[in-house]
Length: 425
Image (tube, rainbow, N blue to C red; front, side, top):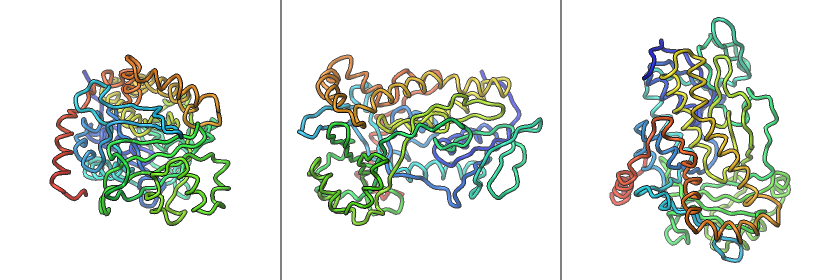
């Protein structure tokens, strides 16, 4: 049972999935949610992402699952093939044993739009653009935000740091990973040699990886797209910038010849964005009148596709903590406590698995291909692999009062959208 508490005045730093979901949830609890973003026009950064069943559970509870599904692309499995054509990763969602379960590939802009539009409609949410937060101070009246080139804010009862892994509220080294990735969102055309319902990857040992993820259709776009990505070490990015584009494409095609048509749609280097990743966990996500959620609390490589999903779970846990606790300190402790085991688990699993797919090791890819791949096709490893991929390993939903969405209903909606030819907006 929840405890009554006067509505709070809450500042949220960052207008990404974590910040928007938190604002939407907290405003529905009658709190005043003020989002501060450093961009003049807040928007998404990046290309595609995966919404896993763990994140879809939150979107369903928000009443946004159908709209997100309408804009995304159904993904039934993750498939990885090494350079000689042997399948070394086959992870179907069917192995979860949940009727109709699937992942959803979606452009970051589409997820942003759904959350932003819902937040903009929600009474109690205010969005303040062009506010670069540089820090905060706390006194008896509350916590005030400090801005670049602006006067400090009025005091807030609570500050939520949803500013991402580059957060300025954690002074510890960010532990930026050596491997990043080049990303591009490219149009999908009839006859393209991609399954359409798979996240497909190709590996040359662990030093090179290419991937294609269907990501649905953006509002105002010309049609369905895929996210293409190519792993690249940060120290090699400067050399890549000096390499003729066709020479780089040749390198990619030697790993995955079927990408020829897709790569032909990359006409300029500007179509590709280099993304960096960090593996870090804030040692103190809860402080006096402040809490970190999403990547500001914990960030990792994208190998397990959990970033946005963990952020959505954090936002939900925070809203539940504010409803259940008696004092503000207890509310924040509950919010972080319900998530801490799941966060710890995925941080360690990601740390263990990432070198199998992105590293300079010559030994680990052999372990992946000759030991782990055969094991993953057998019970119980196949089900555990599906649990890990779906974000459900460690049973994160029950402590938060969440349940898996009705995937059969979502599948029917997805089928009806496709059959109607309804333009996606």
